[in-house]
Length: 166
Image 1 (cartoon, one colour):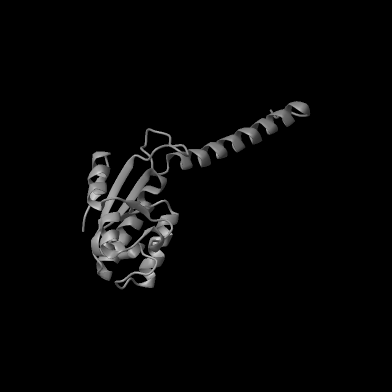
Image 2 (cartoon, one colour; image 1 turned 60 degrees about the horizontal axis):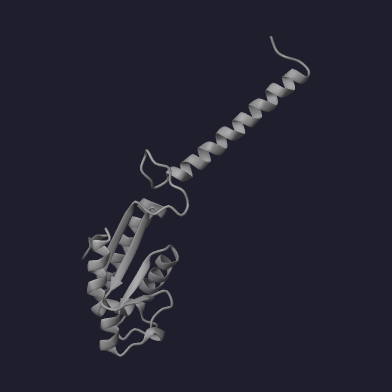
């Protein structure tokens, strides 16, 4: 038997409220679990479960594209549940220069810039910069200059970053 009057209105309102609440929980839950462990909620600002550092040390375009493709693939797989650092040393440093002395394709330059906007950190080896006679203003604005790229790689590994070399 169906209810009539005020009782029916309350039941219909309760059903609408519960349906809306369920939908909100599904949407929120999906976002909270995205990229996280199945049994843990992830909230904005939580530290990522995954940390990786890439060594970027060659000027070869095929090498550069391969490394940057891998960085992008890691971002697609883990979303905001990964922190990625690319340490550019030696001939690889040119990807972070405003005016590189070695050829860097426009596609590579755009990919590096785009990845930085997605939170990938690019570290520039200060030692290599000194050897080239470069200063901070010679580098792209998002490049973080570290004193020695090799020591940066070591220290990041000591901090729990997985090390990827090509």
